[in-house]
Amino acid sequence: MRSRKTKDIILNIVKYTFLGFWGLIVLFPFYWMIISSLKGYGAYNSEYIPKFYAADPTFENYRAAFTTVNLGGYFFNTVIFAVVTTAIMLVVITLAAFAFARLDFKGKNIVFTIFLSLMMIPNELIIITNFVTITDMGLRNTFTGLILPSVTSVFYIYLLKENFEQIPENLYKAAKVDGTSDFKYLIRVMIPICKPTMITITILKVIECWNSFVWPRLITDNEKYYLVSNGIQEIRENGFGRENIPAMMAAVVVISVPLIILFFVFRKQIMAGVQKSGTKG
Image (cartoon, rainbow, N blue to C red; front, top):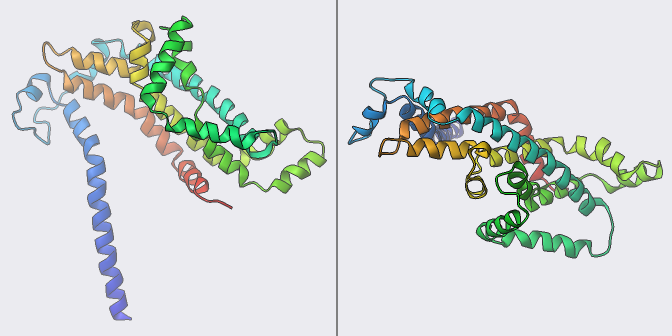
């Protein structure tokens, strides 16, 4: 017994030491981001060897992040982009996932296989196609042009379909016998049961929209429609001949706060959604 207890203690020490070390590796970029945001522009560029602390902390970079560019306006644009895109996408993928999971129609398996095959297409080709399409439609420098290519996701349809299929089919047949419509069954039964997964998808999509960089840079050249990713790039380039990294880091800290809050508020639902999506049957 004593030998087994000693072995368990040693095993726990090794396990938590590894987890602690891995945690430091994961958190170090965030620490470096905050420390860099507190260094003055001159002090940062004068460091031949980067220091792991701010010798003379200053919040000037945070002021510069909002005065150098219209970061507040870009922040508002990003909120609109993330909320509208996520809301439309949830409607699209929910209806599509329900159709593939419960409805019987000719060629369903073939259509779904074609859907899944789209995931193998390189993202660069999709961006080029979307750019040509949006340009031909005259939607450049519009919120519609920003939002339209992101209102669906094959992966999220697949993920939600797998969750819907875990709900017993007998429940659906019983509801149909009672005269319940497909839409009412979806709203009152399937969505509440799969709520953790839908919250997880929502948060992942918001993060995806928040971090979007290539598409906004490609489809907009009007500051009126810039997102925070455009603002960070502007701040970085506004360094009097050198990259203004401290101000850029300050901007990144500011725009990361909403995502961090979102994660901590819904962390339990995220873990439940991931656990549910990984369980079959």
